[in-house]
Image (cartoon, rainbow, N blue to C red; front, side, top):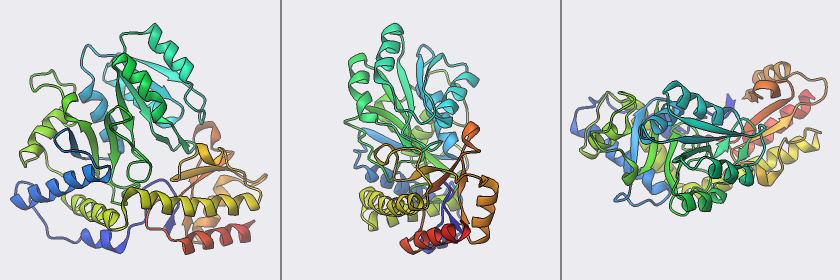
Length: 356
């Protein structure tokens, strides 16, 4: 089955075989070495200096990393602004609300670009905002938000930028230093081609709260994790087999030429998808420059329901993804993440043509 959904992804044989590595106790030196290999590998994806940056590993989905980032890095006297233009921005607001974090939202229609004038006005009217949270790649629509535009706005006001990079880390540009990013939450089982079960936060070491800071969460406290992992330990039991897979996935990414080559590969595959579907009369929701290389959304043909389209494609070995919310009846989404080849995409287009 070829998964054209935005995670979990098709695995390479190399990563799948890593799951068969020996059983290992998370308190043994071999696990400590595995954990450190992953932490170093994650920083190397974007050439980050370990003296200034840390990769903090968690057992959980990408949402666990998002929740850890929001609850751990915003102090009790801090105030958060969440930029929303899709489901996952709205999820960041839900996290803040559940944990009683003071926050505001800057709402946009789903798929719309960030309105910078509105952002600046909001910040000018609420000068007590200390953090901004934003989704880099909003998979609701495929919108790739332009984070570089936020840099001067954050720098002028000394505001920390917290990024949901769950579906962009490893395949889209993330200039941590130049873009003034304080932390970025992501996961193993999307652009890195690992398996579900491990997520992580890349953060500046100087944004970690002090050890005596009052905590909002036990299991998801990044300060505790980072302190223990720096010592070669872990505060809680980690998902050992998924760590094996992530270590292998990072090695595979490096061997393949890094995130730039993965971006190029995704771009080539998505170019085939866009050209092929447009030739069949299925228009993309967003123009090419506004969409990520990871996922694009397309309008369903007139008279064809998503359910029928999905089921017929699944019978032929392909899984696509529905639109969300009020877009469910009009859109479907195609992702090029995972161990997917040009031949897989060419056959997908042939299957779609036959179905139509």
